[in-house]
Each structure stands twice: as C-alpha cells, then as structure tokens.
Image (cartoon, rainbow, N blue to C red; front, side, top):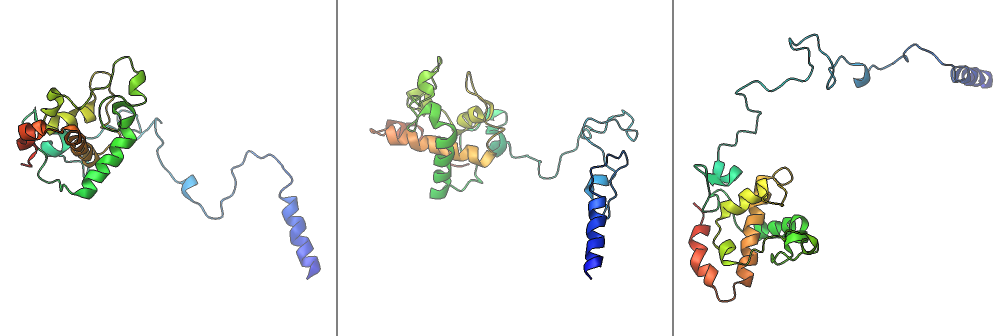
Length: 199
C-alpha cells in the first residue's frame, strides 16, 4: 500500500516540474472557457458587416423597456413638463423616507440638507447651486424637478443614469417636503398645492 502511494506521489511530482509547453492544457471537464463564443470588438464571419457586436434591429424594443407613460418616465405630458405627480405613484411615509435617503446621498452635498444651496460642496462652487426656497422655485411644477434631476441644468450634472425613475420621483416629493418645512407662513402651500395633486 505504501509503495502504491509513493508511486502516485512520484507520478504527480513528475507532472509538476515546470516544463513549458505550447500545447493547450487538457480539460477533463470542458467548461465555459472553451466554448464557442463571440467576444466584444472581435471580427465576425457570421454577420455581413464583419462585426461581432450588432446594433439593435431598428424599431425593436428590449423586453421591459417599453416606457409608454411619458408622465412617469420623462416627467412630461404632451412634450410639456408635468404639472402634477404621476397617478401610479403611491405617496406614503416610506416613499418620502426613500426620497430623503436618496436626496441626502446624491443632492445634499451641493443643495444642503434643507435645500438652500449651501451644502459643503455647494459653498465652494463658482456657480452656486439653486436654493429651493424662493417664489420662483416654489411655483415650479413636479415635472420641472424631475426633468432637471434626469438631464441636469447649467452646471448640475444629470442623474438619470444613476437613479431610476421611481427614485427620481421620491426626490421630487422630498424637495417639496423641504420647501413646506421652510414655508412658515404657508404662502407657497396656498399658492401651489393644486398642481401637486396626482392626475
């Protein structure tokens, strides 16, 4: 028995002496490494244009990417910024808390925790971030905020690639919470509350 073990040990050592070989290793169990596949940016003999990476077929939409509701996905109705929140949103405490979480993570460094544009980063910028607490900003409809978050404005970068539509709407709602928190006399609430009804 001892001699048999010694024989296999010597056999293993004999195969691991560091010899260099140009032959590919032998795969006892062929796996994903050896499958036939196309790799990005490689040449292809299969497609007429010779490229392995192909553009989507014109007029097709990937499953799950049919975004017909422009109100929810773009913040616009008939090409104009929406004057109300999308009707499919359920506004409750968890929704607002999610908005607060996203706002504090992505927005407060410039706009500050209360939305007055004096965040730690905002203070040092040559072009100061907009304060949400002005008559002009109080009267902006929900679609305006959604559009700015999605596409950016002036020196503010777009966040559409970073935040999904639902999270963008939570931030829009939380911005209104911040505005109401600073509207001590209720002038904004009385003047613009109608457009914040869901339609």
